[in-house]
Image (cartoon, rainbow, N blue to C red; front, side):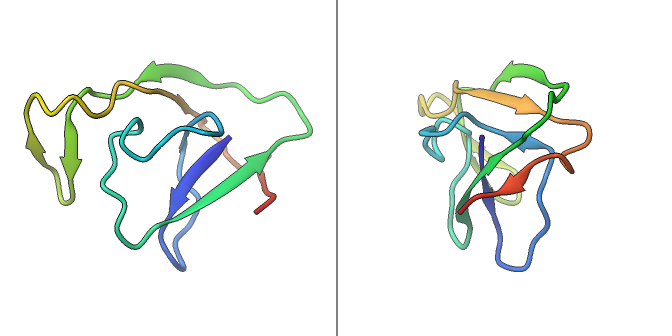
Length: 85
């Protein structure tokens, strides 16, 4: 799995499959770093699809831009995931 993480920031609960773009995840990545994770144990996750809009922090939305719409997973407890790079 992968996630975009801000410098000094903590790991969040939403992950995307490796190879997903920031736009597929509904993100406008500015100061975030792409981090890849793995888990050696089974993890419970809620699978969903990101909103097909381009989201601008702190929450402004450009309607109909076509970005987003990718798969994401909500992991209630991300502690089993370890950074691999």
